[in-house]
Amino acid sequence: MIATKTRSKASDTRYEMGRGASELARYTVLVTWGLVALLPFVLMWSSAFKTSKEIYRDPFALPASLSIDNLVRAWTVGRFGNYLGNSLIITLPTVLGVLVLSCLAGYGIARYDFKGRKAIFLLFLLGIMVPFQSVMIPLYYNLRDYGLLGTYGAMIFPAIGLGLPFGIFLMQAFFRGLPDELADAARVDGCDEFRTFWQVMLPLARPAMSTLFVFQFMWTWNAFLMPLLYMQKEDLRPLPLGLMFFQGRYTSDYGLIAAGVAIATLPVIVVYILFQRQFIRGLTAGALK
Amino acid sequence: MELAPTTPQRSFMRHRAGYFFVLPALVMYAIFFIYPFLSSVYLSMTDWDGVKPMNFVGLSNYQKLLGDPLMWVSLGHNLIWVIIGTIAPIAIGLLLAVLLWGRTRGQLIFRTIYFMPVVMSAVVVGIIWGWIYNPIFGFLNRFLTAVGLEGLARGWLGETNTALFAVLAAAIWQHVGFCVVILFAGLQKVDIELIDAARIDGANSWQRFLNVILPQIRHVLTMVTVFTVIGGFNVFDIVFVLTRGGPANATELIATYTYRKSFSENQVGYGSALSMVMTVLALAATIIFMRIRSRGEELE
Image (cartoon, rainbow over all chains, first blue to last red; front, side, top):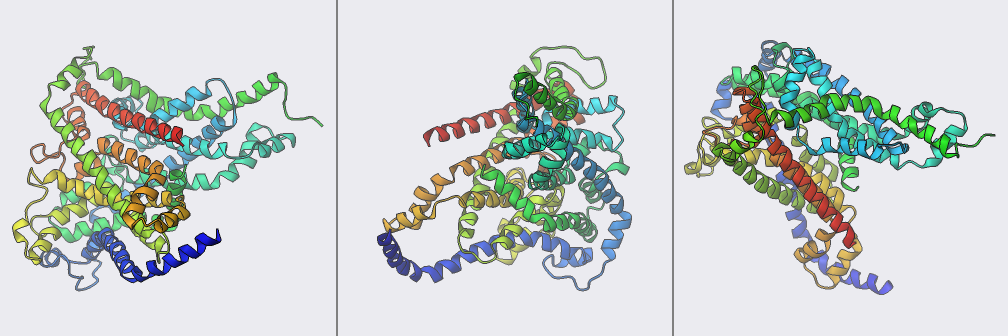
């Protein structure tokens, strides 16, 4: 043990010599990709303050003045307030629905040994593997028959149903890891099955719930194909879809489009910065399983 | 004091509570996934156009599919997409993750910035890259002109031989951050002592990476690969926003072709058969992944 330590120290000094140069190379690569990832956004946002003429003349230049003309115009002409509201009306109930149903079902699958448990779990897993396209066509006609087409429900209900496989998978993995003693103690204390779940086990699941929350939020907020198919009425369009049609209508008004993009990206960035730990921790936990 | 249920009878009663926990989710799932999924399978064996009464036609849609040149063109594009769209972001992501690993200043800031494109909607990414490729004022052409390569400037999304790769580049750009974060997480489990030992044995950094680090993160690597492969078979959003499958089908993929057939041309039966192709590809990729994974576990 001691021998290894001295030997590794000796090799460390040799290692240190080439280090300054390799450190520089290392940070150069890291910063370069940072710029590649970030610059397109910066160009877009700075263009939001420029006139179309300015953009055409030099797309890379900083705006001459901080005119919020485009932003105001996009907000009013582009009805982005409307789209933002639609996105919230769709996303919040969807996330809540997935969270509630996934916690319940994940707990049931992880903590009870009822008949058909395995089959039900496999059935849910199937939903993780197959793409949305495998249900999108009949779903359109189903929603029409249920009278949901042309309402927010046309997106909320299927989004909940399709979010469940991942949610249940995540929650059952978490509940499975909790020790039996906790639930048993609660039962001895006279809690019924639901209260054991609600008051003892669920509060422990907060980390898994916050992971599910951020991912489901992101997927619903950014969903594109589902609203494209089921929310064709202009009044119902969520932000991404609204932005796409907005871009199609004002193709050559570059400053206005940039402002639309800036407005559409702002809520995502705020949520991302607030919850970035949950994003990264959730992926990290998933990757290590 | 009464103890927790011990007799099989009471334990059975207790476990029955599981049904009540699972039931609400199962009902939602059955209505909005299982039922439409089975309907898809059925519709793929009909000639339905969305309006007229449907006729059962057996496997003839699938037969037609085999002879449909556009299906094969789309599938070929998906294959290109899967191959390049998997190798490129994982290679870039792996490089960045390894470079970030260890004592790096601003580790979290780098990861946060790299991940930012991942959280954006495909529409935002599409519009941004549409600008980058714009033939009139596009940043890419302006940049090429500025560095004296104006001969390379072109309408990237408008020409059939560059369109697919241009869209793919946007998708890769968006996906790299996802690969970095997951691979970086995988690196946290790598045994540093083994690397030190390899260094002492005279292994250079490339050998250390290949023989010591790579085997230890192969679980995470297969996981990222399967995600990316499945994503590559299903990709729709970014292509629809940027090119809608054009020009001249140069970026037509199974997903955009399915959309076109079932919703623009109202060939619901045929479109359903196409959607089944996507389903089978995604399932096959998952099963292969699980095989590889369980074999890896046996070896351990």
